[in-house]
Length: 86
Image 1 (tube, one colour):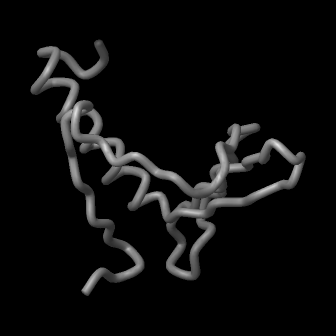
Image 2 (spheres, helix red, strand yellow; image 1 turned 180 degrees about the horizontal axis):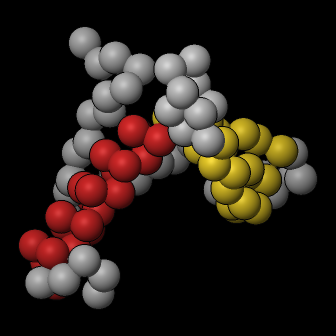
């Protein structure tokens, strides 16, 4: 069971990346980090997104989730390119 402060991360090669046939592509208009945004005093991260129809979407993560995703990306870059950013 995944709790609110955990995320399941799957790392796959580009050649086997999932092909999503539904949904729309959203553009990121900005990110807001709220210090002490949770009841426990931890930060939250808001991704402000916009769809092709102009509709606004908000994706909210705890800072811990964003850190876990960031660490996985850094680890992948180090493994493939030998450094954190190619």
